[in-house]
Image 1: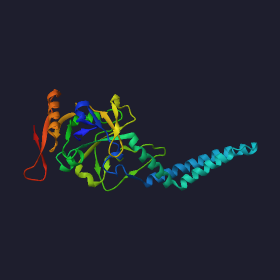
Image 2: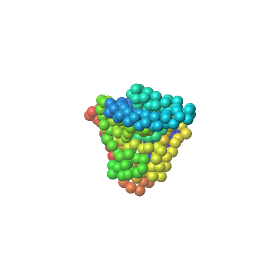
Image 3: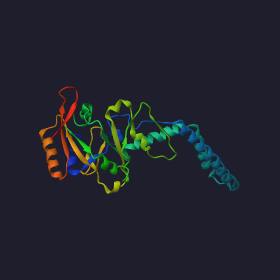
Image 4: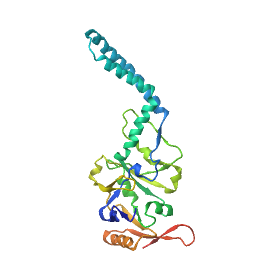
Length: 281
């Protein structure tokens, strides 16, 4: 986490709020990319076949009395039938349009909390902790698992799967959101991150947990959404190699007033290799 966030130094230590990042705001533009698989196309074709058969009988039952009464509603029903046939003939395009709409709306519906096993990676500190000037919070694994999956709106804590293949998208007609598994797969290029994730649905009540939207947006123009997780999850804090004295002071002051054991480490450059080591404070 950067040392400064939303204009306040180390806000999580003071307010227990942490960002759940929308997929479109992640640093990988390929996040959640998928493809419509052949099974979905076949299922959709079968659905339309069945619907067209049933709808044809409805159209015929309507046509006969309409002819006798010379009413004008027939063209509307005929147009609807032609529309259904057009859906079938252009089913791949229709499914792609449905998928594109879901993909565009994903940032309005969910956010991701990213965690890592690889806390000594110099690349991780460069990318996600303001070039080694921030801190890394170590969460209690048992408590974070109790949070995830057991409270409405939170997914289970899951490790990210790294693959060269996109996830197949099997969509039932009327699907309005991406399946959860699409948020837990990334390119193998990112496997060094050893990432774990919790997915949250913004439109759920989250068991009363505070959800805050900051007035400002991030550098990519995305709304910053913070969710209250509380301090009880913190088990350790690692201070970046290039963190300021003020940042280190704030972390140590937090430990002193926490009223429970919290391990504090300072990241140092290894004397014998290209790498980082954690030194207890």
